[in-house]
Structures are given as structure tokens and as C-alpha cells.
Amino acid sequence: MKNKIVWKLSAYFIASLIVFTLIIVGIFIAYFRTNTIELKQSELKERATKISETLSSINETNAGKGQGSGYGAYIKFLNDIDMAEVWIVDENLDIITYGLGQHAVTTTNELPDNAKQIVDEVFAGNTEFSENFNDLLNTPSLTVGTPIKSQDGSIIGVVLLHSPVNGINIAISNGILILGLSILIALIITILLSIWFSHRFVKPLKRINLAAIKLAEGDYAVKADIKQKDEIGTLANNIDILAERLDEASKESEKLENLRREFIANISHELRTPISVIRGSLEALVDGVVTEENKTKEFYSQMLSESKHLQRLVNDLLDLSRLQNMDFQLEMSTVNLCDVVSDVTRSAKSLANKNNIAIEFENCADNYAVFGDFDRLRQMILIIMDNAVKFSKPNGHIYINLSQKEKLVLSIRDEGLGIPPQDLPYIFDRFYKTNSENNKTGTGLGLAIAKQIAQRHNIDLEVLSTLGSGSEFLFTFKNISSGYTENN
Image (tube, rainbow, N blue to C red; front, side, top):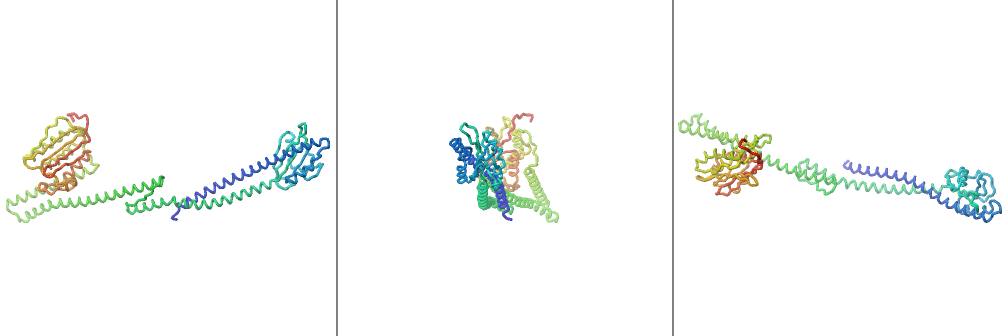
């Protein structure tokens, strides 16, 4: 049962060989007998022709000595060495002489059944053949008739050469027997070879099946590892590709599961702190632990600050969730990037002025048209500006530059603390925050949101930073819109 394909293939091979054998045997029997009879006829014709020519010469030598003179001894000699019956007859089927040495016999009972037809054809100038059953010889026979011509070319008699075909049938039987034995031996050898070839054919299929079973069991490191330039090789290669992709998907799924766990843990941690502060403050106020007016106001201010932080955290989570959902549609249209940056600069200046931080951005002389969502682009740039202000030193500068050569690039550069090299690969991860006094109130979601907005707009976002010298965020826009007008 484990080798069904092997036996099926073997059965197909054997069945095909048997059909082929039957066809070959049929063709052999048909053509071998025909060709053998044709060879016998050719041989008889040649012998009969030589006999008739000899008899014609005897007739010329014995002219005037009587009809049939000299024929008897010659015919007896022929029968002795030729192992065939020979008759010499005239047009009326009168036997001049025949092969047993007898002469002047007038009966025609000993002649073949269709002798009349053969003699008529010969006297018409043809050499005639006939195959029938001879009662005298009690066997199938071949008969050939050739003319005996006189000196003037006229036909004076017919030589009937009669030979049994037992030898032919025996030869055919022997040929069939030899053919049958050869085919039987060939069948045995072919069956053994077909089983061996079938096992070799099925062997890679077994390896592919084993690989598929292991894949179903979750072993994605398995390989069929079959190198064949045929359909089986293609199937094995596809199985290997499938295994690689399932392995990648498994690792990615495991990575996403870890991220999910970290995400839940981070959310729990971020939510627990403000909730704990708010609850502790409320308990203190409700229980009357804090009664002084100054202390009470301090507790209320702390609860308000924590509730704002909690609201900001929830809003960031909602924004990040929406942006990561590809079904969430952005309101895309053609916008002027100068307008977006100018609006963000105005909003950031109020915060920057508190620390005497100058934001240097000249109004755009050109209209840089891009295709995007105005509000989301503003949110993305504002997140970077907010961080630039947050991490800048007092009396510092923030430089904003828009340029377009081969691509449209927005640069926001500060002179702040910079980002440690070990933190650079992770700054766009959710809830990742650097250990800095300036970042205590951050949710760790701002840069992750900015990254998601950039990806949804097909924008390359990268950061260059030197510790102690500041950071530069570069936005490379690919969805540039043509034909922008002031009405847009």
C-alpha cells in the first residue's frame, strides 16, 4: 500500500509492453508468412523456368522422334533431386509425362484442382501461381506454371511444378515460437526494469511527501533538496520556497506576538502611572487627608496634568491604531508643502519662545505641491518640531529647509542634545523613550506616529544625529503633484 505509484507505473509499463507485443506478433505472423510464400513462389518460378527452358532444348534435339520423347528420364531425375511434383501437360490438360516416371497417362485426376486455369494463363503467355489444398499430397501446396516453347516460339506445353508448403508452415511456427520465447524473456527483464525505474521515479516524491508532512507539523526548516530539471524538480523547489516563506512568516508572527505582548505591557505601564496618581490624589482628598487649600490646589493640578497626559496617550494610541489599519482612509489631495510647514512653524513658535529658541524658516518662494492629507502631514511635521523644541538647548536654533533638485526634501535640524548611537535604530518603535530629563512627559508614541504617517504618504523618513551637537530629520517626498495652483 505504501508503493501504490510504483505498482501502478509498473502495471502501465507492462500493459503497454503486452499491447506492443501483440501488435508485433500480429504483424510478424502476417508479413512473415506472406514473405515466406513469396520467396517460395520466386524459387519455384525460377526452377520451373529453368525446367521449361531445358525441356524446350530437349524438344528441339528430339524433333521428329515423337511427342514427349526424352522427357520422362529428365522429369524422374528432377523428382529425385527436387522433392517436388512435376507435370508436363498440353493445352487440353493431357499429361505428356509426370514426375513419377510414368508416361502417356491420359487422366487428369492427379493434377491440381485449378490446373485448367493455370494452363490457360500460361498458354496466354503468362507465368501463373496458385496456392490451394492438394488432395493427392493431402497438404496445402504451391503450384507454378511456365510455358515450354518450340523452336518457332509457339507454346507446345506447360510445366506444372507442385510443392507442398509444410516446410513454410513449420518455419512460421518455429519463427513464432522463437519470437514468443524472446518476448517472454524481454517481458521478464522489462518488468524488473520497470519496477526498478518506478522506484527511482517515486523516490523524490517520497522525499517531497516527507517534507510536506514535516511542514504540516510545523518544522519549517525542512528541505526536499531535490535537483532535477523536470516537473518533480520544480515541485520540490516550490516546496523548498514554501518552507522558506513559512519559516519567515513564522518568525514574523513570533516577532509580532512579542511586539503585541510588549505593546500590552507598555500600555499597561503607561496607563497605570497616571491612573495611580489620579486615584491616590482623589483618595487623599476624599478621606480628608489633605485639607490645606494650597495642598488641595496642588493635588488638583497634579490630577489635571495626569489626566491630560492620559488623554494624550489615548489619543496617540488611537491615531497609531488608525494609521496602521490600511482600511483607514486618508483625505488625500494636492497640498502646498510650504503652507503645511508654515502652519506648523506658527504653532511651534509659542512653545519655542519660552526657551528663547529661534525657528528659522523663510517663506517658500516656490509652491512645492505634494499629494497627501494636510492634517496628517501637519501632525507628522509638528511631532518632529515638538521634539526639536523639547530637546534643544536654551537660546538655540531650529533650522527648517525645503529644497527640490532630483527629489523634494524637507529638513528639520536642531542644536540640541542629540541621540545616542545605541538608541538611533529604535527611536521609531512604539513606547521607546530615551533616558533623558527632557523626555519624562513623553508617551513614546510620537515618532512611531510620524513614521506611520510618512509610510502612508510614501515618504522616506531618516534621522542624522551627533551626540551633543543636535539632530536632523529628513523627509524625502515621492508623491509630488504637478500642476499645483494657489486655488488648491
